[in-house]
Image (cartoon, rainbow, N blue to C red):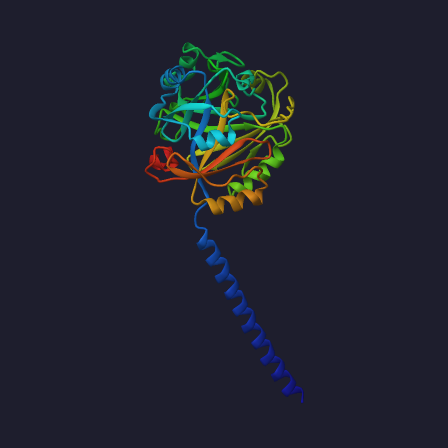
Length: 357
């Protein structure tokens, strides 16, 4: 009786193991199949950052001379976009797309100009909103100095500041003629082993937030990056060099970065100089950075990610520049566009060799 019982138990155990193995195999196959369905991120890159300026030609002269941006196309802004986000029915905008080796700015000049939006000041260093673009350049380009010669004004120290003595990089914040903030990182490539590929590139677009954690949660889902690079959690980054760059005495800040194929998205919070979100979003034609246009694989997947992340004001698809786009706002109310467009369009982020690295 004992031997028969043991034999039966043995058979049952073998059967259970076979069933478990089959379940594990099926589970692995399901996970594998799911990962194969999503072998690329929904957000493929950044097509451009929109910038409202007073004069297209003046902006072109400054940024082509100091940042080596190249004019690639001119066109009016889509009426559908103006109707959705313009506060005046007769608002018009001429635009000029300016390209670096890895990313693009789309300068926009709105008419008529005598509107309430012109009374908005550009976003300050500590935000809130899309605060600056960072240009990363070789030291010998003298890019920052040429910005100043072209009419820009420094924000912190006039001379660039080295934050870390071990890194051959100096930093400076400045305003252009419209009061729009930008950053320049000068690198001494003779002191680093990494080979130099480009003398000029755009490193990141920076959003300054009064509360960084909801923004990190939002963009972690949207960019499908649960573990972005972080520094200074809780405002641990501080000291005289940070004060000298920001122009804000007693600066304490933290930063988070998401790599979006061809461009970094930087989130920053000044714990020492808190800001409040405005009651209403900034008008499209207010001076400064007005939009980040992302390049996406399809709009349905994008909409699903936006809903999961908690985006607000998600629009229906609209025709924009020969492609289809939807728009939404992040937790701080910043305007984001998501465009599905042909890769041979001048607006596509996939025009850059090696993503501009």
